Length: 282
Ligand code: PAF
Image (cartoon, rainbow, N blue to C red; front, side, top):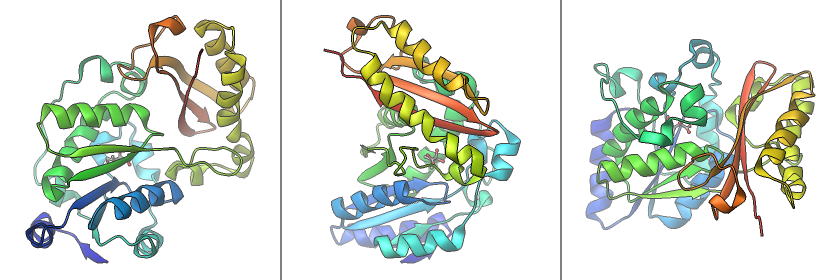
């Protein structure tokens, strides 16, 4: 695996690969890699001749300074994991490389970014769009891979790719979970031992809510999930919305969509965790 720090160098390597007719797959990450990331890398390696992974903790998408400062960083472990997963290029730029000057672009994704993460983390998706558009311009991949845990992020990236007319296929990959159901996340390492024991309740409650939903209203299911989790002293639900999985608009009745998805953000102690589940209402 080649480790590349500059855009120029990455472009040079990848243009040679493309001249040879090789397809390029790309997995953007912020490092602190876990098996969820590796599942994206595995898919990327399987689908493409060349796999590029980026590691860059993007300051413009953090609306909370403390979250940026405490974001886990494990560069050596990341390199070992990527090498054994068959990644060909690791792009690990500096902040100056990605932002030689401040990025003043303001994206407009309409309703997609007005709800859920967009509502609770102002500016977050603008920062995501800024960095992902820059990374796409650097790697010019044929395909790019994102985890469905960040359900809204996938919708925003698809919208951005369409707005910018980028010929990149966006591939959403399923959430990877620990044995107890907890969605894998780089932030999980920040949980204390006690919080670690409680955090799986998020996924368990979401799963149980799919059984509870039979014959119940959207409002009942929303209350069930929120109340169950808020009963735990260590947990505080920031939002739980059942939305149309295509538009991300909240639904009031199951008949409003063929693709209802429950999206949640919960503080477990100080650590903010997100997860989601699809309902199959017959
Ligand atoms: O999902 C992430 O890790 C980040 O939001 C991404 C897509 C790498 C952009 O910084």
